[in-house]
Image (cartoon, rainbow, N blue to C red):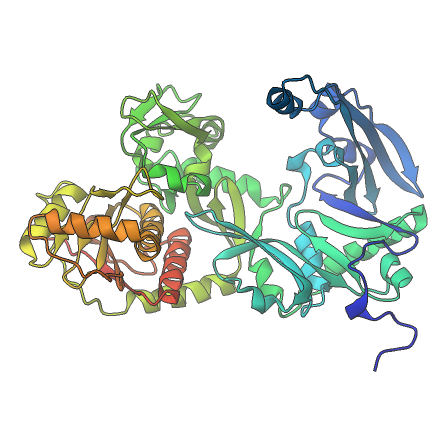
Length: 564
């Protein structure tokens, strides 16, 4: 029975109007000292200078504060040219964007409150604590009323998903993979009687947590400071709710985390070694679709004494050739300032994309009793529960007896091309499809169905690797090729034609669908493929691939190719 003096939560508009005495505000927690000088360092001074925005010191109650605000006029909107060309007459519309930011030092915490279109640009992104909004949300949201989730897959795909249920639902119904996804945003309702908004609404209010916190805050100095202090108390003293606790198992490291120095030093030293432990190369998520069509890579790293290099195949050794002779302290900095360019041709003339070299480096480092993962230039702390669960899942996958038997990889077989050809000769029923692309309307550049087609239609993907980093891309490839053959009729037709035309080929049934995907792996030195020989990034990629494929009713096998 509902209380007579409490609003009906189910029928309340979704916070169309903020509670009286509050205003919806975006709050950033700053990784700077909570002093007058400290909060000034969080300003994006280059941006302020470009627009002649001048910060002014103030006080909010007894707290130091900086206020910056202004507008940026534009004489002509960028779409005016499009309209002018379409109608054959001049269209000129000007506009002005405005915004403001209020930086405060409350006790020992520094915050930035941003308003309008431009407010967030006034703050230096590197000074923002990326864990803040989610940290508050997982401690206060009503777990059965989560309204929006944004998550990013850890792995080679780089996929970002955003799901929304306006009425809210329990977190588990969003189907989040607790052990392979980073939740970057979560939105729901909070009922904290110490917050001004909840007091005014006499109930819960909508809150969104990401790197920032979007929440109605008090509009008087007294209520604003009280709200910020309550938010800080929750983050310091409250434990994450049981249903949301998993979200903090993979969290980005804060910019001011003291472990950054040790991480950089360890990584810099490893980059000077010929075979660094737990360091690898992985394709950034935004470039996965492009890599299949790359003809060459150009690596340029400053302050190393090494000229830019162009190579048809990118591996860790190529990058290390630019760091091994650099001075201590210059290696990781060089990769962050260096560029890696993708070209469609072998000569390096048809540029496709350019990224910092650092975004291609993955690494695992243990410091101060914590386990850290480097992914696309960002360090993440991996919770012990996450690591243990992942190890158990990978052990189950690897311990499953394979049904496909492949020949040893002898010393005479110099590369994957040689091995695939020899395997097709030695094992009746194997069809060589390595480097045979299926070009369709959906995949005009072509995709590789597999390296070898097994006797029962198994898609066998082969990889020889000195470490586990190239395997992350291998696992993603298996999902991509299956997806094309499962849902693209033209791709299946091309595959049937291709298999029929190969030496030792055969006719595939008209209704052919892949039923088994095999990852055949040869690690250097004859090492076994085990949980210990795959570092976390590759484990996550394998786990995700297996989960995706098994959801589609596909068996997945991991076969260790034995050395001769």
